[in-house]
Amino acid sequence: MRRIFGYSWLASTLAFASVAQAADMQAPDDLVRNTAQEVLTVVKQDKSMRSGNQQKLLDLVEAKVLPHFDFVRMTRLTAARNWRVATPERLRSCPCACSRETTK
Image 1 (cartoon, rainbow, N blue to C red):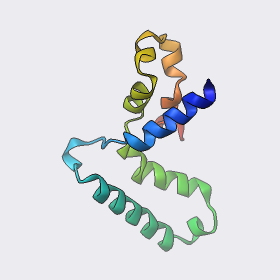
Image 2: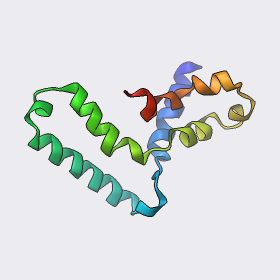
Image 3: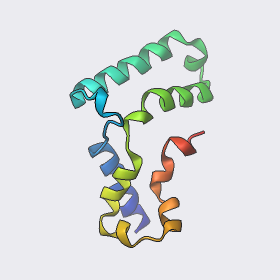
Image 4: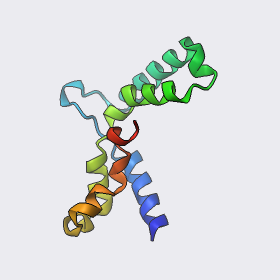
């Protein structure tokens, strides 16, 4: 059951990534292309990132990539009707815990 939930969560993450700020709306393919280009540019320019500084890479991902994902919405879509019946404790421990707040 956990494996199915994990796969569902991954699929919804990929399928339903949404822009956090409505003012920055772009076509999805442009958003992905621009974000990837920004990240690659920064990595190419920073020698410590290329040599494997994971903390700097995580900070970069947190700053450039994660703001484009609505983790709570993706989890709600994945959980479907189970979202409505879940306890507050269960909601706090769900996969939306992978959001920006817990990557620090």
